[in-house]
Image 1 (cartoon, one colour):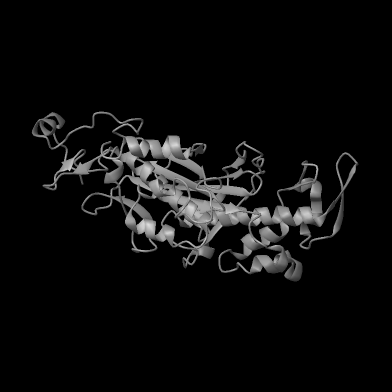
Image 2 (cartoon, rainbow, N blue to C red; image 1 turned 180 degrees about the vertical axis):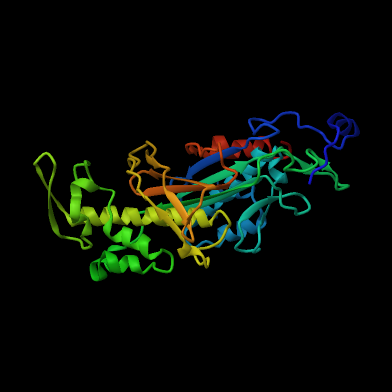
Length: 391
């Protein structure tokens, strides 16, 4: 319950001090904003060790000692790059969303001190409500989703609030966000598929996916991509969708009367892409609360009408990788009942990546924007230098 107080009197007494400007943040009452960022670390901090990589020392000076120790303990520089980019992105989002100096950003974890979901806290360790974020990294890419539904505020030394009397007074109810990246081509899945078949490979994950989800992974298909880049739809493929083995010759008769011949390799690739679409959805959903894949309710969370997004184009020479199809009509069920307070989206990047985002809570009217690819120097390091000790 919040008290209704005279705003002018509060401002006169200094208990309520409106911020000078909001710098592109959400309006002070109502609303909320969603941020999505991507950093590609594959060409950053070159070399075999993050300790000696050009520019890495400066970047690590902008994060905490605890984070530096974790990064320097990574066995592979690729993992260290992603961890460093992740630490920088979290600080950038919090500093911009709350309108505070880079050095004032404080991070902690909700719930479990080691495995809980990262969160922003104030100078005395209290979780700052009305803001939520999540990060995922895979095979060189680091992505962030953030929600900001509050007016920037802080606590004075005498424990009074500089800003709203309640950080959530008059604002949108809480929203939580989650994100996950998968790389379809990263793992050596074919070894098991060739031995056990696709059905045996999918059943390895029976502790994560329901019986109905696994059946759909094995025997349903969205489309297949032929070697010339063209697509065949599920209707054109027909009952060939029941194939679960590689290296079989398939011939499809199209409605036009033409025949298309292809290897079942294309079919298995498409089904693997569907599997990772399910996996990406499930990961981003459970990251709403920060729980891991071992959450006891994981098999009770089901996705229906799953479609894998068509891939984008790979990066070539000096160009950036291209975004592919975006899909946002998946149905989410928990314990057999549809979940209506969640919005999910998945989008492909280059040929092998997919990124899923999830928002849950008072999400009506909120939309996940397209990802902004950040430039490490211009968007992150320059901002940190300009806002190191002041907003």
